[in-house]
Amino acid sequence: MNSLVSKILACVGAIAIWWMAAQSAVAGVLSDRIDRYPNWDTQAQVRLHEGELTYPEWFRGRWIATSTLIEQIAPLAPEIVTPGFESNRQYINKPIEFTVQFVPIDLAKVAKFSPLNLPRLKSSLPEPQIVADRAFNGLNIATAYLGASNIESVKIDPQNPTKQITQLTQDRELEAFVTGFDLENLNPHRFISTELSQQIFRTSSTIYLNTVETTTSYQFSPTPTPSITATQISAIYLSPQDPDYFRSIGKLQNHPVALYKYRLNLVPTPRV
Image 1 (tube, rainbow, N blue to C red):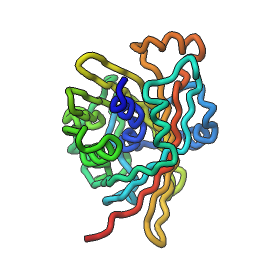
Image 2 (spheres, helix red, strand yellow):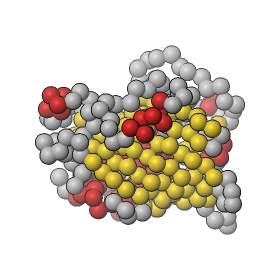
Image 3 (cartoon, rainbow, N blue to C red):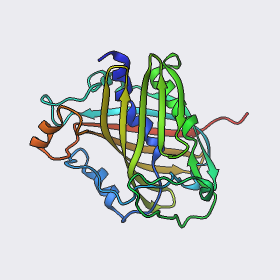
Image 4 (tube, rainbow, N blue to C red):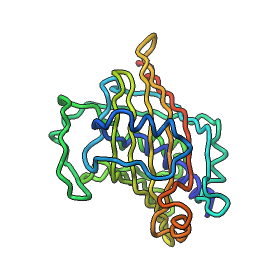
C-alpha cells in the first residue's frame, strides 16, 4: 500500500471529529469510557442512529484548529496491525493546523436520513442550532493532512448530511458516514460525544472498509480569549470484509485493532 493511501487511512479519525451529532446521553457513560482508555474491549454502545450534528452555541463561528496525535496503540499487534498504523507515527507530537467553521441552521429544513429506518428522534433544543460546515471543514482537514495537490473535492450527500465523500486524484475516493452516535452534557462548558462511522476507501483495484469510533471530550474557556480544548480518542475496528476480521474475533469480539489519542485546540480566527 503506497504512502498516500497510508496517510488517508491514518487520518480518518481526525476527519471524523467534525461529524458528531448531539443528543443527551445517560450522564457519566461517555466520561467513564474516556477514563477507561486504553482498556477498551468493545465498541461504544450508542442510542441514536439518525439526525444532524449539533453543537453548543459556543462553537458558533470560525476557528483555527490544531490537532496533535499524542499516542497510538495496536492492541492486537503483532498479529493484526491496520494499514497506515506504522506510517502514522510520523504525526506523533506534530501539530496539524486547519480552519473550521460552525454555523446556525434550522434543522427543520434539513432532510433527515435513517440508514436503519428507525423512528426519528427530535431535538428539544431551540432552532436554529449550531452545526459544522462539513464541506468546508472536510476540505480543510483533508488538505492539511494530504496536501492540496491530492484533493479534487469534498462533498456532502444531499440525502444524508452525515455522509462525506472525499474525491482524491488518480480515481481514489474516501467515503464515510455515521451509523450511530451519542452525547453527554456535563455542564454548560463541557460535553462529550461519541460516534461510529463506516469508512470505505476505494481505488481502481481495491476497496478497504473499517469502522471508526471517535469519542471526544470538549472544554470551553470563555475568558480571557474564547478557546476550546479537547481530548479525542479514535478506535479502529475491522470490517467483516477484512481478511483479518475473523482472526480478531478469535481473540476478542469487536475489540479495537488500533487506538489513536489526540489533543485538540481551537482558537477564533483573527477578525479582518
